[in-house]
Amino acid sequence: MAQRTPWDERQCPRCGGHESWKHDRYVRHPWTLAGRQSVVVQRYWCCRCRRTFVPRSAVVAPRRWYGREAQRLAIDHWLHVGSSLRRTAEHVRSWLGRQERWLLWRVLDPVPDPAAR
Image (cartoon, rainbow, N blue to C red; front, side, top):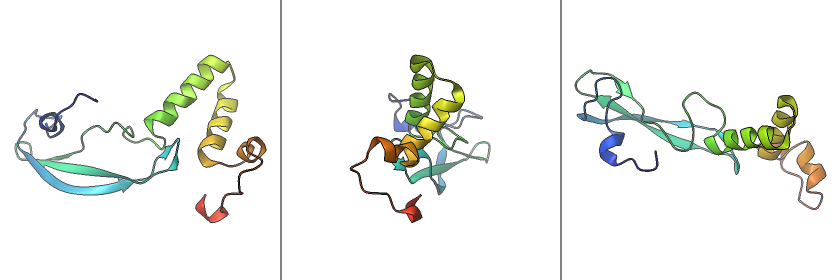
């Protein structure tokens, strides 16, 4: 994905054509290691098959709530720490949302605003 060119990005995944133009965009809000982020996703319209498509993103996988880096963190924690899947999910949720255990680990940090959660 890191070696894609703009030519590859505009290729339709259904018919393989490159005749497309920007059709619309929408905003996704995945959880990443930096917290909740707003990511603008560009949608394209294919002239050949007359359908819309969204190219693959390096930040967030399609139909996922968590960014790729957060998913990789959870998998690495589960594999290398040897914890259960439930405990791994609790830890990762605490790290990403800066809640629950986060306040126990970072005692000197200011308490996050509850409206920002």
